[in-house]
Length: 54
Image (cartoon, rainbow, N blue to C red):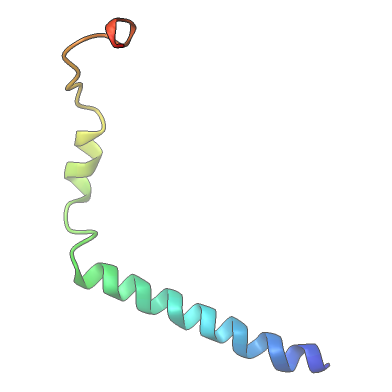
């Protein structure tokens, strides 16, 4: 029972810090261009094949 007195505030603190981090990332534009990121991963910008790199 005394373990719950420790674990419940820790869980609430971790959940609140995750929520704050999410809103911080949202406010700083981390999620502003999801379509561009999805298209960028498909682009092949390599000039030479992997076998020729040293």
